[in-house]
Each structure stands twice: as C-alpha cells, then as structure tokens.
Image (cartoon, rainbow, N blue to C red; front, side):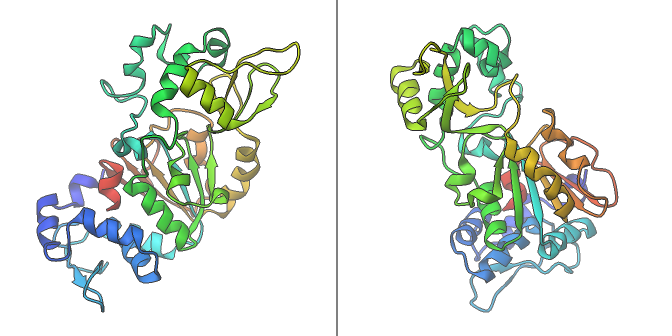
Length: 323
C-alpha cells in the first residue's frame, strides 16, 4: 500500500490550497470547464494530496497546477501522474465504489452494503434479488428494490465520474468497463461508445422467457408506478419482463466479448477503481492487459495482484483519490 507511506495529511494539503479554493471546489471548477488547460489540471489532480506539494497558480492566476518533480512527492505518485499524462488508451474498470458518494450503496460493505440491507425482502439469500430463476418465480423483491436503484431519479454523477469525463474529453479514454447498472456514466456525459456496461442497463427490457423486447419506458412505468413486473405481450408466453441488466444465470452482453480482446491489446494504462474484483469474468480484466500496460488500483482495500513494477495501489475512497 502506498497510501499511508507517501501521502501527507489531508489538513496539510488543504492549508496549501487556501486561497486557491478547497479541494472540492477546485475539482468542481475543473470538471465543469472543458478547455485543455483545465483538463490537464484535472488529470494532474491525482497527486494533489501529496504532503508538501508545491501548488502554483497558472498564467490566469486561478487553477492550481501540479509540478511532478517537487521535493517531497513520492516517486510512485509522480509516476502515476506521468502515466496518465502520457497514456493514449486508458481502460478504466469501475465498480460500485465509484457511486457510493452519490448515495448508491455498494453490495458487500458490512452494515451498509446492498446485500446487508435486503433482509426486509425475505430472500432465501441476498443475491436472489438478482437471480434469474428467483425473479421468474417471484419478481416482487426486485420490483421493490428497483424503486431505489433505478437510474436518473435521485442520484447524480460523482467526482470520479467527472474524472472519467475529463479522460474522455482529452481523448485518452479507450473504454470504461463499468460493473454498475446506475447509468451515472451516461449522466456524466461520457460518450456511449466509450462505455461498456458489463452488467447491462435499465434503458431497454426483454422477456425472461422468450426474449421479446419491451419498450424500456413502458417497463419503467409498470415497475415504478404499479410496483409489479411487466408481463410479456407475446401470444402463449406471458413470461415476466425485466430491464436488460445481467442477472445471475445470464451471460454478459455480446459487446463485452466483442470489444474485450481488442481493448486488452490496445490499453497502455489500466485504472481499476471502486471494485472488489469478485465477479467473473470482469474480475479477470487486470490479468488480461499486455505485460507493458501500467496498472493503477484506487480502492478502499487492496484486491487482486497489484504488486509488480508496473503497478500502483492507493487506498481510500475513490473521490478522495481523484480530487
């Protein structure tokens, strides 16, 4: 772990930012202004928390800039900043941790995770709410849960999503492989072709029995307003319809398999952020990039095998690492 070894105290960093805006305000300014200088500054922001960081004003006297060679900055964090600046094909693998600050719980955190809070639904096991066979026999628990997790109703993109948008604006983002179904990448303005929703999305829907498509808005209206699962309209079917998110027992989207091999050959930097790396095959992505591809893990805990010379791990919340 490099977080405790190389990072200075947050209070020290904030004192150094006095007069230039707080860390949060600085990020907000950088994430909403899309000219090249602001984008460069936002990318540099990865190392803004390093102790004794020498922040200076740019020519306009407004936006703090990172000087990677400043005395006191760790060699590893300076290297990460340079990796991002020099990369041309960044692949980001993101999980539930990137959406926690938007008010969307992750799955496995004890006490606050989604699975821990599903006891009221009388499930045989927590994962049953996303189990295809269980949904076909009892869709009501998912329909109740959908009231809380349906995209675009109460949640907004986080600072991490804004960082991904900056990578996209700088033409550095090759692909964001997201395990999330909240759609916040779209709300952040990242182009559809740069997003690969590994576990599907809510925008379309289909029958769990025959596969017949249903208009996504019709599915949404029935589930959210009537709080029940739609029924397939195909004659002699009548199966339950669900949004096209991937349940246990279903395969990943064809687009995942189509793009993965090519993306893994092209990637020159992999950023893994906010994921437990417990769900295959997405969890295998860090091992699929080429040997010369740099790898960065931004996570609350260390997961996977990020121990080589090409790797860097920073512990903590995603937003704190990227502001």
